Image 1 (cartoon, rainbow, N blue to C red):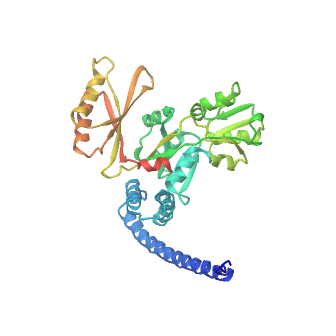
Image 2 (cartoon, helix red, strand yellow):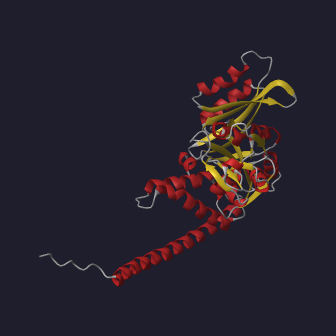
Image 3 (cartoon, rainbow, N blue to C red):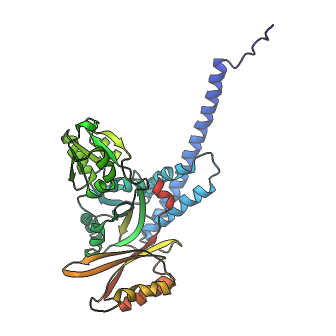
Length: 376
């Protein structure tokens, strides 16, 4: 003889339990809002202090260190990887209470520079799209914006030469960096691979997807455009064109993804520099960038330039050369090094290198981006 089945909670009892849980969530939301407003009042006071002391609104080091501390102290179950995107928007809202922040980027909207600016500064920053990297530098130098964000190197294609060259003509300061994971989408009006007659994008994006294109669209014409957003605009006008760009560019132009994640390297990341007019204070984890020229006829000039950094224990993280404008076969040497220019070893190495150089300029000392930012 079978035992009678025990009755479970009724539908009404289940609904009551869900209602109680949601009421608790509503209570927590009210407490969160109250705490956000308390934080906002403190940020308004910080903004008043910054205005009195002519201090910049944006502090890359402060935001980096707050995010690192929150991730370190997070007990869960709130996922640590969600802390940065959530608090980036909190920072953006609080910054807006402290004062106006205009950030220039390589436009139009939908470029990866736009995506990096939104990721770094949040929805409430005033983002200003400009036509060229040179225009971004000029806007910062002429104080039309407080900051600019420009790409400087990519893990697949290397250095962005237009950015290095712009430092020669403009008097701006590097005041931060941002790492942006780049995932490319092939976008078109129909979303069908068989409709593609031409592929359009900025040169670096085409190069970053070279293997995928040769495998899936062999022989198809490739068109280089001024930006990934310009390519998406072209694809929106011509059904035979597919653009390589961001999902953001696709949405903005009514395009459908034919394929996603078509970049050849999974670690495809672009490093962006934040440029402004003030050098940040030491943060304890900084980089310094400088540019040097050497005397062409001097034997061992490059060795003499680099030797002080090794002797002073300063780690060089990057060395790039660019042709000097108007001087064939003479070069500018761009050096990135660990540490702040106010750190004794860096200061000593720079001074000794300057004595052997023909000319030099420190482009900036700035807080390093967190490694976690590249994965966000």
